[in-house]
Length: 247
Image 1 (cartoon, one colour):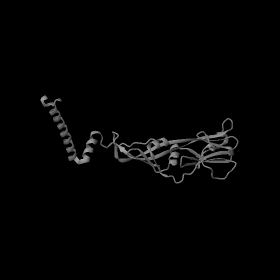
Image 2: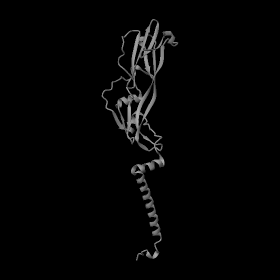
Image 3: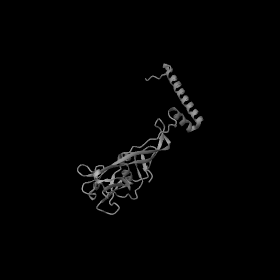
């Protein structure tokens, strides 16, 4: 599926996502879950696991012994195929470690700011990318049927069972709740071509009343300033005999 779409309100107080709360939680944290059953016939010389990382990344890990060699495949791709003794330690324990890596992508739509940090009325898109990695370890001592899979140090049997997500409502919450629940940082988008500083102030005046309106405001400010100065001078030059004395 496409990357989650997240929209941020102009005051950055509200977050809207097209996916539900549990989907976002699994997506952000990348939790590993065990899927109940593995496909394929159950044989003495075969062991299989289905592992789910996050809400959508599902992997099939298979270990099989045949013709004197042991084969480990991940999602149908052969990871290693060699005689058992070639991958055994000094105690005769067969083991192989590998990593499942990937990239999480979130598409944000946020209101842009100018270089001064002033929020604009236009929106922009920010694509957030982050990598993740899970370490898997497959091992057995006696036979393939006794093989164990560990994910990030936890035995496969200890992982929480995967549950399908059904009919989740799109997530709507405050920025504080979003950051607190998922540990995410809401990005910013700067429009370097937008006016800033004095230019933005003048543009605001002009947009409100056109150039004529801007000149009117400027003349009005000058007039008020001049009247204040004259009024002050008149008060300062009132003769003392005109000042009423209290009895």
